[in-house]
Length: 89
Image: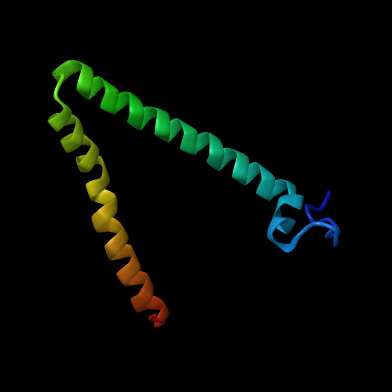
């Protein structure tokens, strides 16, 4: 079985060293494709809201409403992560 580990090239800067590994390259490519799809979906949904209603106010309400779960869940996640690791800034 072939190993994913390769010799690290010293000519590559430290910040890009992870890009030498095939699995990490695939991960980054997958994340990029996924994020582009998410951006397209968000744009299409907001465009549909504006086309159906013609209201900039409703467009703003729907744009804000799509971010509300992230606002609350990130606060809960950060608090629980700090509590479980015992580290605080």
